Length: 352
Ligand SMILES: Nc1ncnc2c1ncn2[C@@H]1O[C@H](COP(=O)(O)OP(=O)(O)O)[C@@H](O)[C@H]1O
Ligand SMILES: CCCC(=O)OP(=O)(O)O
Image (cartoon, rainbow, N blue to C red):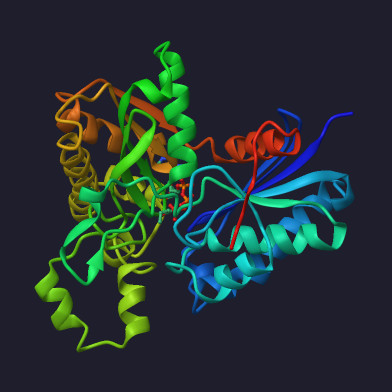
């Protein structure tokens, strides 16, 4: 008999859910959350009940009872510095995800929701390739200020999955190639995958702005601004109300593209600036591997946009061939990871 897996992926603008029977995708749903809906919540953890109920409703509408699942697996939030792969969700992890994660991010809700669904049924719950997967080298951790160490917060799950796919298409192993992967979603991160390890990255506050994040902001102006707003307001300006939404009032790139088609020059300037900053982030990482880059990959929801990807391509394709993997393979990567764990092919780590 096949094993049923429930995979849950909360992103900043959506909650994606899938049901797999072994490697077969039986159902997949992308529940999108509008800027208006999300603005009702003070903190991301406050969105727990809303997202939990949407998942419950989706399962109920499609006649999936919880007791059929052999495992529930979620995108891992920035809970603490982690290795790639699977971690079993326990009370300690749920506590940390809700009350003291490395950053407030939608993916923190994944582990919490998975645990709450799984525990009453006695089903194992896992996170896989968490956002805080950390393979940075020592030299990459140096920030320039002794008090602050650079952190690895990155779209590890999708990047590693598309990185492996790209290597396979090249008839090579992921461990034998150098890739620079830019994930363009509600948040944007870029990482260099150096022979199978994410040795350095441009995180979502170190480089390009994104639909809802400010990215790198000139430090002196940022310090001055901290005297005008309280901590929560400042954090919201950087994450949630920064980037496209601060200039154009929307996190929807589809809406921005509609405005550009209708001749909105200001929308075009801002949107092209986002692509320009992504290109700079990609080129910054070429130094890590001394220019030896086999492929540049553009992935994530915004990679569906020909406009954005063509702007990036024209600035970076002198480095290496550019491949586009629109959307993400996160639900599949989650389900396949959990399947390997429950079949005993891979070991899940304990979270302490
Ligand atoms: N066909 C498309 N063209 C341009 N942008 C798109 C398209 N489809 C989705 N997007 C944009 O992708 C972003 C969401 O990407 P996604 O990877 O799903 O993000 P997250 O996981 O952070 O919620 C949104 O800004 C959305 O407007
Ligand atoms: C912090 C890196 C992960 C991230 O930004 O994810 P979303 O794009 O889903 O918000």
